[in-house]
Image 1 (cartoon, rainbow, N blue to C red):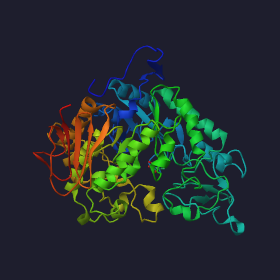
Image 2 (cartoon, rainbow, N blue to C red):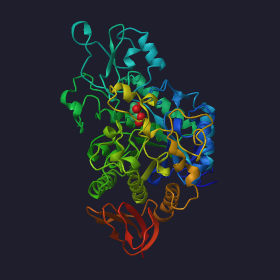
Image 3 (cartoon, helix red, strand yellow):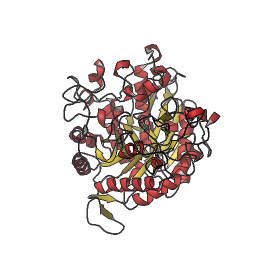
Image 4 (spheres, rainbow, N blue to C red):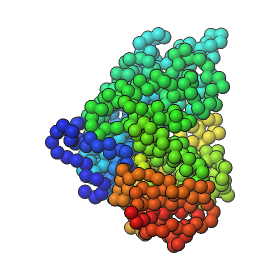
Length: 558
Ligand code: NOJ
């Protein structure tokens, strides 16, 4: 046992722990204050030296995750797939891509992780399959109006001979959301053309996903991160989206996003998940505000939603403070706990976002990556302060692999190296998400800085070794050690139950207490006086004053 919490073991007994899918699971709501580490498998650790990360590599790094102290890991899609969208194009939901390993490897991972007190969440991708999925292949081989096509959205076109798409819906990756087949019908794909959208009003689709959920829970996973949770349901009349295309608050009437019917599907899943004590679901829902987000957390629905409203807030006390306040209030009204996410595999890494000049849009900036607009040191400094901020808040924290090393976005990737479909589909106007997916530096030197034996599927920058695990492990003040200490102290000093109370919230400073612990973050350009108390952790060396872009945890007399 290297770290993490012991997962309970023991006999099945009512109200205690129950054995399901081979995994003894506590009925405690473990996720409410968990630290959950996101493993982007392709880029985490390469066990077989083919340049792509895999389950074998992840298993060799479980001790590292145990030492870091995480409660669970969420693994991005690892299923059979043509990997046109990094695995979010699933060809078979019950098998593992040979690049990543086998089902036996997955079982082995569950066991190995559990023995270190770490749970495993997998990615559920229900909005669309891959065009290589047997259902879609059967649909292509079948005629218009067939049961095979009824699992997806096939429609006739508009205009003479139906040569225009059925409506004006657009793909998230750019271009129209419809592709025409040689037989003249069009099919819907809200993402890449190789990701046809499933028809969720078809009972067969619904039954299939309940079964997929059961399959993974039986294998021993502790739950799911659910992809595009605000998707799935479509207006059955397929109306034009019109001006709503630019709408951020979808309301109830958007033809494709955040529709009321999707909640019924979630409730069906929840019934299955509830049969496995300790299992949970976290929703990836990009909606405009907490009024909409809280709907996903109603009784009988998701256990958690990612708070992207917080992630999108700029580095200023007013914005961050109000996002925190909203999240805590909104989740408490539905009996849920907040989640704090600073980065993931879809967004520019936060060390870079926080280092960009004020007002610069990170995605637009990425296109030419103008170095003069980025202050790398300031970005890391703010990222470290943000870590202490989120680790002290009530709720759970999702850590994206590499953020514990203070990694920046690799914004210098040459366009020939880009793999994300966003680049081509957007007509090369959006560079895409490869820059946050570059394989992790484990060692200071070597062909792929310890990622694997034979290079990496995306090029790593020359300076990558300086931020490697090897360069930071055991080094006082390193970002890795800051994370380790923060995760440990969070568990020892805070826990879930200590009440959150704002102590100060103005345009310069955020300060709140959790019992006798006080977290203070200076978001101004000037030092501020440090309140009385014993400093237990600081994001930068700290005396009597708290420097700009610095956070501190203090213990005060009870
Ligand atoms: C959200 C995933 O996080 C992203 O990586 C993917 O491209 C889309 N959903 C489509 O599945």
